[in-house]
Length: 283
Image (cartoon, rainbow, N blue to C red; front, top):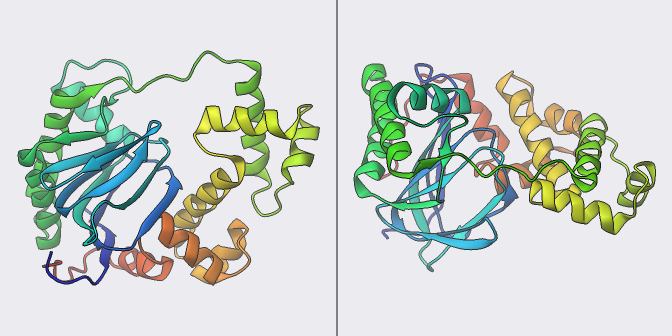
């Protein structure tokens, strides 16, 4: 892999509404456990990415795709010393459902059956989508995105695993999540949250991890970053967004934002301010 400098661009193209786009080269980057509201379709170009997903480490190398369904907890890190390079598209669930209904026999909520698929043709299509967006070719970008999503659903589509039927633990976890959403800027301690819900801290921790794939404090950080992204998209300054979601200051937001989104909040927002800008592609 030529060079070891980390670079990333996270942007949107106005003609692909609801779709985030990313090109990145990471060497030392470690993504903490987090989720996405959209699907993740990441095509590896060089190196190896390891991501923990579904209770196991998954390995994706050149020509493979890392595929993550919405609201599915996962991590990410380099699998080789030289890191990894990739391009990714993040289509909204509504768009994937529309494509699935039009072009596949899948019924119900569509999703990916396995998190890694070795398919160089689909990987190349992902990079063609990014190239078309860079060039401002709306027809090509939209067409190629639909083609690659269709292909991936036909090769690796299914219904995402459903959570077990509601139990006392699941109900407690859902109530805890609602409290954390409401009190995002002033969250309770685990002990007081458990007491308010009529359970023990350990039982709450176990139920929350079973329901959401991460402990409450990790989920709260992830939720804060999600909300910060929406504020940044709306034009809120990073320093104000940090306070509004419960971080102590902008550096605190920046640290967590970069570990989940892959770029600092300032760089993220600059791309949002002018989605028609087309900086040079990564080599």
